[in-house]
Image (cartoon, rainbow, N blue to C red):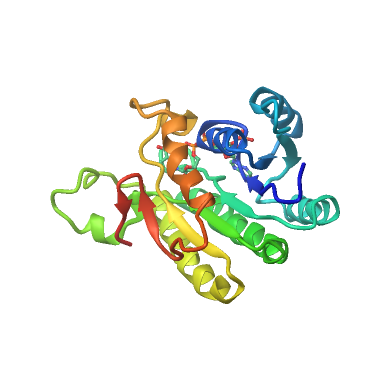
Length: 241
Ligand SMILES: NC(=O)c1ccc[n+]([C@@H]2O[C@H](COP(=O)([O-])OP(=O)(O)OC[C@H]3O[C@@H](n4cnc5c(N)ncnc54)[C@H](OP(=O)(O)O)[C@@H]3O)[C@@H](O)[C@H]2O)c1
């Protein structure tokens, strides 16, 4: 790979939207580190989505296991010396698991969607600082928009996923805080909503493909230096917090 080639890390990239983000970035010439809880599964996907120019590299990453985060930041520092793009995609939703208590649902969801994301972000900041164009994309959901939830005619007004919505609202808050903290270091931090997408997480509901959902994440991963920070967006533009 060349010095000028951007390097991206995508968490939760073994399937669904994360896989599509990794593939789209690779097709656009980005060196992709494909985060996988199961390294073997990740290696299989990496082979499938590598291009003739870009060798996608699977890396072990479970955002709830700090040792995998620490090992990965050491690996990236040693091998590449910097990171240009972090896509915080890994996420779970347990609201429709009736056998779990609310304590279990909320603690597991927050651990992955919020604490794991913050821990990964913190570990990658020193590497993103080495980039001239650091970008962080947090994969959130419009279901967490307080403004939309207040509107009587909102398309998702009847949706109630307490633990998932709370986790993505916390992720949105992290987005604003990190955008503020990292602005002086020229790292842009934005939250995106990929839209309701047919993946394992939604039991493949609906028509929207992971490839379509990935586009807004990739757009914000590849923002140029005049692009915004601290925003919440989807395909159609700005979303209200
Ligand atoms: N699908 C939608 O309609 C929709 C809408 C709005 C937002 N989103 C968000 O988009 C993101 C991707 O969703 P998806 O629909 O593609 O979900 P998915 O098909 O269930 O895939 C989730 C991915 O996250 C990984 N993952 C889960 N826990 C992890 C952890 N602790 N550490 C690292 N990786 C972990 C999974 O890895 P394994 O393969 O190892 O399980 C998998 O690769 C999530 O943040 C989700 O909340 C989705």
